[in-house]
Image 1 (tube, helix red, strand yellow):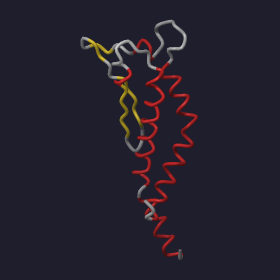
Image 2 (cartoon, one colour):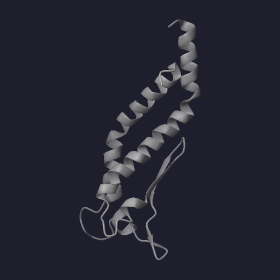
Image 3 (tube, one colour):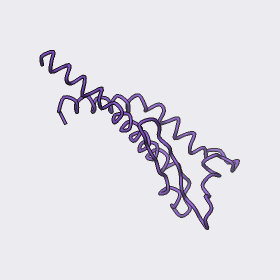
Length: 120
């Protein structure tokens, strides 16, 4: 690749950074849900299937939208107000994903670099 081609690739890469940040946050949200689901206590299964993530290029928001009779009922195990050990679902899941974030980021950046070269 000549210098002009490399400069164009760098320009493409930099021009797509906002999209890359969004993809990274989206991947973090998806991974969080993969980690949180099996750690979510099960009665009817509604709580496990109620995890949602919303990503922007600046942040990712994770929520559990499980409701029964119009009331969000999952917070007792999300925030460990039960008094039972092991129900720190949000904290445990967050810590696992935080440890994995460098790998998720590296993968996202590799994909963005390949895209900037046209190696989809």
